[in-house]
Image (cartoon, rainbow, N blue to C red; front, side):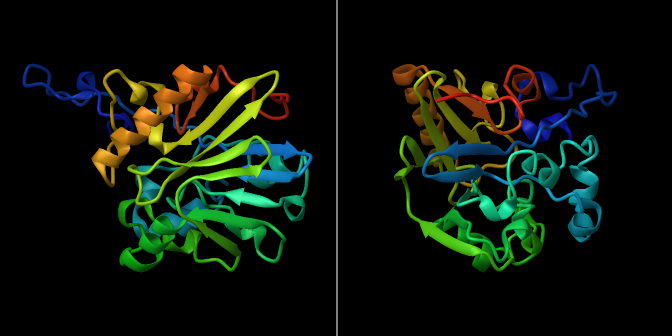
Length: 255
């Protein structure tokens, strides 16, 4: 996508002295976290559909954020099946309902998985979004018959040592996941509360899409408190530079 949609950096802005278009096309990783726990298996976000060309076409997102550089091994369903089948997943925690975070919910129709989303987000996406594709919501991606579980705010110990935390602002009802591991420490899946690590500041730098700026600032402050108090690893939503430093499946962070 155009990097100016990812994060509002001054060095991306056009200047009168240099009006020629800059090459600002940048790769955007799309992440899913799998928690394998004695109490069950939990997925955080389910990425983009491989059928994006057809499913996003009517909204224009197929041209703005094309999902181009994905290998067969990186496809959601193939990567998941290196560990387990969709019907072995107990919880799917969706950070928010933009199309690149809920695009594989169809995999969990007629399974035991409970799909957790903030009530404010579900209400906004299903009741307020009138035009498919508006503000990042492609309605076909979440108009699916799964076992929805709507929550308000934080949820402690959805699995022992695993908390859902409210990170509103980027979307009407965004959420993240805090995972505390004995050996690997605290890992926070921030999703689009922090598009990149630069978002965390100082000063906080927003992306192009912010539903409520004041709440977004509060979410950034919350993430930074975790970083200071627990030396937490914050996994940003779409940071290509950070991805190269992370353990990616089939590698694991251990309890």
